[in-house]
Length: 184
Image 1 (cartoon, rainbow, N blue to C red):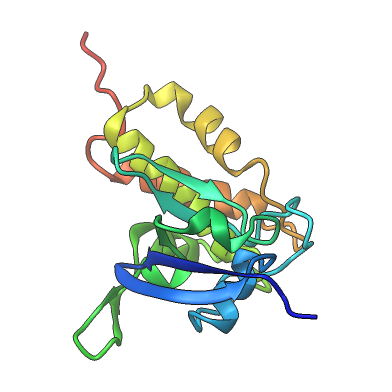
Image 2: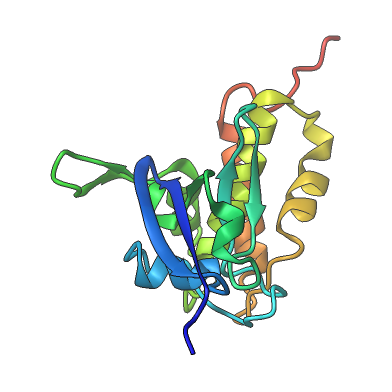
C-alpha cells in the first residue's frame, strides 16, 4: 500500500521551496521541520490550541495573518508566502544574524520568556499586530485592548504573559506611526 502524495511549492522567509512531493496528509509543522529544515516553529499541544506553532502568511494584498501549522496540512500552504520565526531577524550575506526584529529585541529586553517554547508563536502574533497598526494606527488608549486581543489565544505555560504584553506595548509606543496623534 502506498501513501498518496501531493506536490507543493511555496516561499518561506523569502526563499522559494519546491516543488516537493510530500504525503498528502503531512501537517505543515512537519514539512517545516523535515523538508525545509526550519525547526524554530514549535509543536506544543498538537491540537491548535496553544499556538506555539503559528507562522505568518503574507497575502498578496499586503496583509498578514497567523496560521497554526500543527493542524493545517501542507497543501493549504501550496503557492503561498509565509514567514517563520527564522525569518524575522536581519542577516548578513553569510546568514549570521546582524539585528533582531523590534519585537524580538523587546521580548529579550523585557525577559519575556522563560523556557522559550511559546516564544515563536508570540513573536509572530506580535509581528502581525505591528504590521496591522502600520496600516491602521490606533488611539493610545486602545493599546491594551489591541495587545490583549492579539496575544490572548497564545498559551505560555511558564506564565510570561505580563512581560510579553509589556514588550509589545513598548514596541507600539516606540514605533512611529502606530499611534494616532491626538488633534487638540
